[in-house]
Image (cartoon, rainbow, N blue to C red):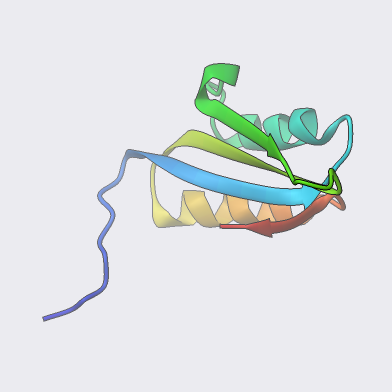
Amino acid sequence: MSDEVKIEFPCVYPLKVVGDAASDFLSRVMTIVSKHDPSITLDKIKEKKSRNGNYQSVTVLFYATSTEHVSAVYEDLMKCDLIRMVF
């Protein structure tokens, strides 16, 4: 028996994106994710700044169709110079 969690696609998939605080951080994340899910709207996003204001995180709920789709979003997000982690 495998302990590996199986995700059934398609599904709403949560992504947490962490990066340097910048005035355009949210818009850059939205631009990247919307290429993969044009239905993304602000109500599917939660934004939070770090205590000292140096970093911020955005949690995005996007419509994922496959493991490859999720991987493609991760890859595109990690190409952004403001983004430090995606999980």
